[in-house]
Length: 376
Ligand code: ADP
Ligand code: MG
Image (cartoon, rainbow, N blue to C red; front, side, top):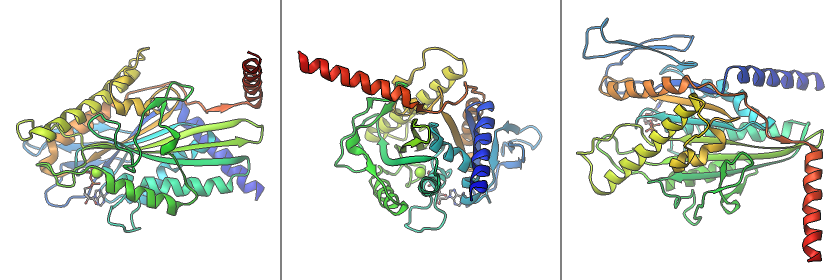
């Protein structure tokens, strides 16, 4: 049993090393199956290349080629997608911060990838469920880490407001708390989870509470960003504590809303949605340029993801594509955005661990402070 475990562990470390060398933002593209129309996809390469063609132009003139870390075609299964990202998700248990987000226009398959079908069926469960159940399993298998604590929170960001928690009774207040200056939410909104069943229950509630309204595009359109965060902490054999988080983000639709078609509430939504997505783009661009000032504070979304975007985190973006002819314009802008993201190279990811000596010293400092306070 030990032999097997060591192999698993070595593979995991090797995977982490390889991922560190590759830089931290990876971009995958996932193509949805066709429901009505013809497809604009000409070619999907094993090497992550994707060729699409403009349906309004003759074949040779309308071709565009993109290159990503990987492209999942329309027949890819939830299981295949998960198998690919499983090692990345597992690295959370080694103390890495990981962020996976789903980008793309409404109807392109973001929610399918992250949650799966929302009809209560347990078939085709998405990354959110598979990741959590894998982390639970792993936490009971790993003998080198003790005192694992896994907490889950689901946050919705709607119109740049913090008022929507995954349970409406919680008022969310975003505040700074991690060492890296990242953000977290108050403990009151955290839920200790013991099993995947607990999570399924929580997430169902979250999905039901999500703001869904009808637009000209799609009446299932979601106008909000939904962020499922898994906080993990534990102790390893050397006495170090590890603390890390996994953000799983289902972004609002990236389509440019025709402002002439919407008014009132819808117009306000469209403006807010565009604001946080363009802030996400700005953050990624400034990270790529290695600027020292990164504009995380310009939107709630980037503020929330601060500790997992850039810096020492591992980030993966799924760019979702609806390959139908009608969506060609949006497909091109999604792929261009994704291509821009994929050029971002960051420093090596870093584990969030503190040695037992540091912890002991911190404790001593706290005790001395208390003693001092008592004397005064
Ligand atoms: P989004 O969240 O981007 O608006 P959805 O995930 O709701 O898009 O997908 C739109 C529709 O397409 C849904 O009915 C969904 O079940 C279906 N769908 C999306 N991706 C796939 C896929 N890879 N395989 C099968 N059906 C899919
Ligand atoms: Mg959706």
